[in-house]
Length: 248
Image: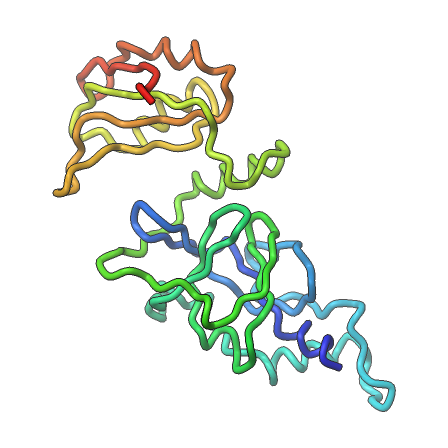
């Protein structure tokens, strides 16, 4: 009976309605998901999933096997606030992070119910773990929650499709200098994206948040080295940029 209730209270983290701490942690919302020990992520538009086939009611009950877990999810499960976070409900001050793809999810202690915790699963890479309220991360003061970039979702999905670790960002890094102060990460991602798959773009900023005029771009495939080096001297927002290997 214990495993049957546990199945009804499991949560799957969905990649829908994503958020992140600005320049730091990625966030998405999660729906209530009645499946046990499964690493299969819920479909993007799905709020709840069918009860698992293996869960069966005690022999004394006359209800069909598939209906019992669904009922338990309604009566025993925690409140499902995930779809409302960042929309009709304020973001909680706590979150969890997937240990496989490094995606993090907005999650409050109340979302884990009244027990010791719940098994939750990442909606991007499928990794699952048992989460307790005591091990939730706390959002630091001054950090802002912003929408999860689609580029991050695309990168993780690409990694999985190509057999790489989900959190892989690439090993081919370039220093990009002489940037106009108005250049955005999206500008560099678009430029280098013409060469190949971009893993990360980091524009270096000062304490005031303004660009220092240089950035680091990481590419996913090392075979792209010469093509990227050929971007040296390319004009971007009126300036000829410098592209070279970093010193370290």
